[in-house]
Length: 132
Length: 135
Image 1: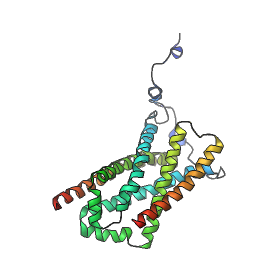
Image 2: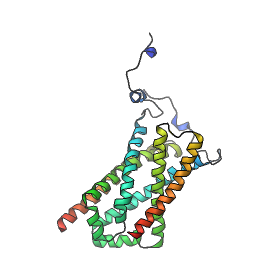
Image 3: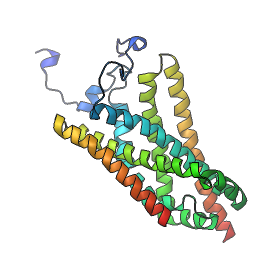
Image 4: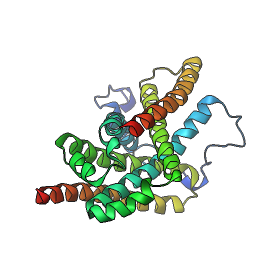
């Protein structure tokens, strides 16, 4: 059985010009943005692995691009933050799937928690990676 | 007694099969949910066990990635990340891309997901084999 829905005429999300931004909306949109950021991270990790698989000379040459300049530090920090945010946001989604924390006040607190938790997690991870 | 009055012995999941705008039931939602549980575990292990190797000298990377625990975590990271990616990117196409292009985009990202997964596993196995040959 097929559904009688005309997919071509469906409205598109997220109607940014209609709703005023609030923490639940912004934190939800950020999950998609950080999902794309994590995609960049996934591609960078693949690049790093392929360079390592190609041998020491290739690895050394590609390391210059991947880690050897100031912009790389900013990109890697962004990727780490995106990973943390996307993971915490995903955990929030799994909690909501169990019909827990759906009250407005609790949901808003969860929104701020993932924002704060992701920044804290990203800073801690980056510091640990720089030390070790 | 009409059909709708009879008690159903089917599970909720079975009753949802074939419903929805894509006639896919809860299948996609379950794909995303299962891969989310996998990612929540694997990403943390990746960040604290394998991520310190990213950017390390070549010998350290090879030695670190070929340790059994790191090797398994890295493999699971590659598989779960690419699987989760291709499941979720579909929502982005459905929500933001005009009809027609979204279908093409979904097919391309589905194939790319498998390609990236294969590429990552290939690199991982090649590093292991090179390490074994080097002794």
